[in-house]
Image (tube, helix red, strand yellow):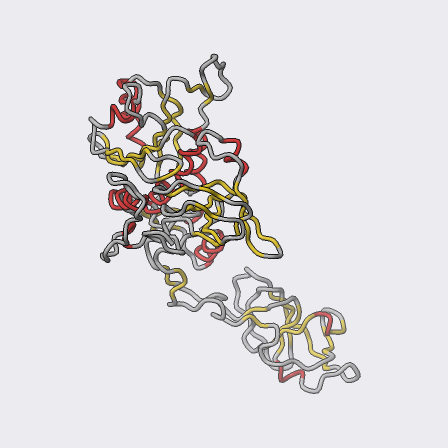
Length: 438
């Protein structure tokens, strides 16, 4: 396990500010380069969870609770029938058999939602539907297949026991008990529970609003005409989809050219709807690299050479008067995707108040050899699968940062440590399985 990582994906001393001494820096990293943990720590320290507010339960899927939920009522609210049948007092059916059935008059019918309490006296019974409240005086429900006779008077062919086919009041949830702790992430089951205990609104952290801007004069919108030296902008769509998959709200601006004034104008216009801005491209050192050129003058964004492959050029800081956090990713699609996974995804989860910040790593057996340069952490695209022999991962052919077709074939990233130069067939390797919920 490399510095600052844990199997849970949560930040450790080097990536989450636990107050403990940082772990040793890998020996092979050149002076002046940041480790992955250095840059991630800067990002996580530079942003905080968004403020919580009351929201409708039906719109809270994927959000993190900012309150404890204590039930005000019992579930079930009353003793009720677990099947369709007849509600009886069990003592009235003592000695009942197929040869000597006990006959009782049917004095009524109870269905859910009638709104009227009901009671029976000894020696009588009542027809009851599943979920309907058990009448006072009854303590068991007999299924219809164990009964003979018509609707007015029926014969019971076997004894009953108290509690038979009865859903007890409070057997699921008792009033006054904690049903969801603060920090719970709301999925369909949790939302069903909240509605069942009567909550129509809850206090939760909202979905971050993320503006995505790609840069480069060569970029065109998909479907537009391509010149001989232009390409379609895939980055902004890919990152917007990744943002949505993380549970946030994505505003894809699309491609902006290399004019610094245009880029700054677009950025300024977009901040009104942004909790976070993500850019791709423009991180080089030429006058055409608009992100580095503009952001160095409009806020606190700093650019670093991170010991990461692919995608060593990275940036983070706050921009303009709004002091909106901005994460600058490289322009090559594989570099942009890997950097999103390593840096932007943890930032989004921190904004949402969700932990762990990082996608957890699993162990898998490597199906082919991997060679890597020392001094950087490499994330190699791979295909992860579970077979009858266990988990294995196969590297995808092609390591270029521009190979988005190869990226689309992968469902995992194989982590090669900074001081590792070779991983061999049969080795157990650290693997990030993409697209899994966590």
